[in-house]
Amino acid sequence: MYVIRLPDGTLRVPHSVLGDSAPDGGERIIAQAYVEVGPDDPDYERLREQSITEAELEEKRRSWRAGDAELLRTFEEWKAEREG
Image (cartoon, rainbow, N blue to C red; front, top):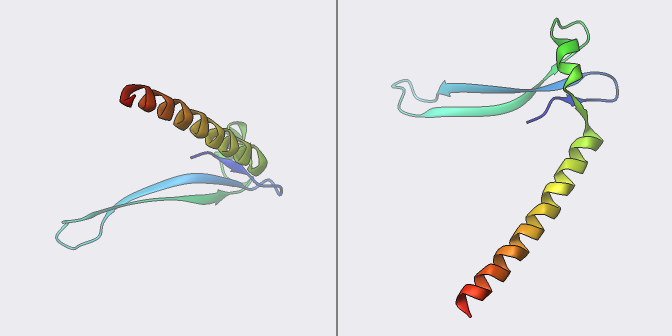
């Protein structure tokens, strides 16, 4: 997950929580979400330096999907060679 910089300067910072869902502790919950951080937060500048915009994140996702398609094509070729 990435620190996302919104157009108004607010940062969306990944935040994970680990907790018990049952009183006996039998099950665990792992939750991942974003919390919003503004310029008044002491960690804002540090987080801002490593942030990306929503457009940059979407470009990363596009490149991952394109890479996935290429990887799948390569795997299918390999699989066909092994079967043939």
